[in-house]
Image (cartoon, rainbow, N blue to C red; front, side, top):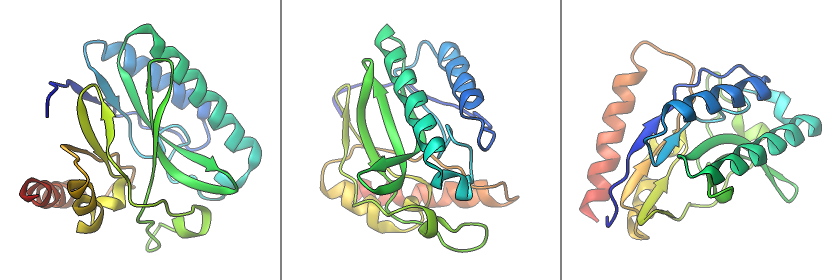
Length: 198
């Protein structure tokens, strides 16, 4: 990696459906993270998680898009870039997405590849799976963006390693479980080890 990056992690605690309020929380945290290069928000941070059927409403999708573009425009101020989770339409398909907002625009979009469909999760019903993601070039670094479940199995990390990712960034948004932080840390260590071997 040619660049030194300062990455901030935004614990937004979004409210499902409160797009304006969630965006305001992100703005506040961005101001507080003024020394960072990149502020990473959680999975679906703009919509709240899990949004269930709310994401199928066109008015909701349009509101998310408007707020995302407004946040993107604000990154023209030279402050931190944002990696924001949001439901995102591409053509006639709706995806669980991570959007890199930088330089006043949406600089990159990556879609969740591995959609969970167990327990409280029924993402296959409301979202389309994305393709295996390629790295995002950000200020001299190749970021491999994997959204939550994409980290739970080796496939996405292995692909990202093969195509040049240098740093894995994994926005998560799962409901709280007592043991989940330890499980995530173990999985993150496994994926990092796998990508380091490539």
